[in-house]
Amino acid sequence: MDKKVTVIGAGNVGATAAQRLAEKQLCDVVLVDIVEGVPQGKALDLTQAAAIEKHDSRVTGANTYDGTTQSDIVIITAGIPRKPGMSRDDLISTNAGIVGNVTKEVASRSPEAIIIVVSNPLDAMCHVAFDACGFPKERVIGMAGVLDSARFRAFIAMELNVSVENTHAFVLGGHGDTMVPLPRYSTVAGIPITELLAQERIDALVDRTRNGGAEIVGLLKTGSAFYAPASAAVEMAESILKDKKKILPCAAYLQGEYGIQDLFIGVPVKLGAKGAEEIIEITLTDAENQALQKSAAAVQELKDLLKTLG
Ligand code: APR
Image (cartoon, rainbow, N blue to C red; front, side, top):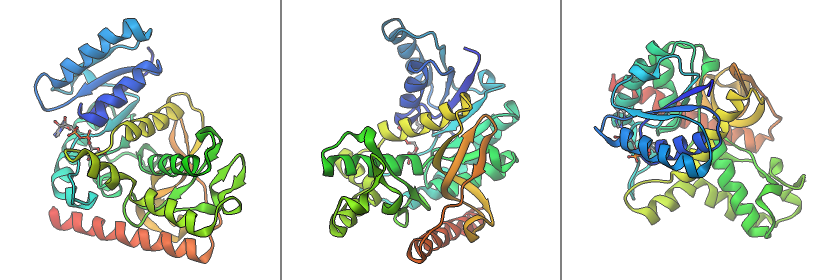
């Protein structure tokens, strides 16, 4: 393959992302993890599945960064996931150290790469990666809105008993309790869900979307969601690798857009070969804008907390 994607963290999200990247024949994949044998073992397993899945993507695993040089994209999933009772924010001190270190390792070897951050708390970890790599803002992007929107779409499809392919949804803001699902911009076959569902049902779906990650943590008990997070990261990677210029909700570094300054937060972004090529500013009602500003304030608090962690 002429494209190379490095996935840091060969755990649940990382290994699943590697599998999807390989099976979609998007690129060769390098899996890196600190646990000896795990990235090598999973890479070998995926390599053996290739004969049956019929693809020629090469998947390799390592505990060092030597094989990551000149990656087109680096997906960072290293860190700890949450357990029942934990919020994403509870992960901040552990994951900030891990994300900072791994970003430096990959950035020095792949100075032209586009970094997709997946580790939580997502928006704060984007700041850690951005500071550690020194890349332009277009090349550091966080995966959150695609996942949150996919969750919203799943719940809309379940509620209306329609194909999920007919659904479209937008979720903006930080990847946490303050996220901002936008029912007015969420549609089924082009029809806004506000025309199809009673307000109380929309509120219930919005609520379930906000708690979508926690619902799965509560069921799994030993970790957090990984199939949909991996799918979301790979959709972003595909849009970049193929220069598709899809507009997807992603955490991007805002410098005045939506009235927000110097902060990573979820907004609609055009993803192409150069990374976050454009931030799309959509018109928000007063209530939607207030919710977005509240979410930005919550991300700002975490950004400030990072400074105290050093
Ligand atoms: N370098 C490389 N890999 C690391 C490092 C490090 N410094 N520290 C931890 N890891 C690896 C772990 O060894 C583990 O294999 O990161 C992997 C994380 O995998 P899981 O524990 O299975 O967690 P996962 O469910 O994949 O979630 C990873 O993504 O969605 C977020 O909140 C989630 O922050 C979490 C991250």
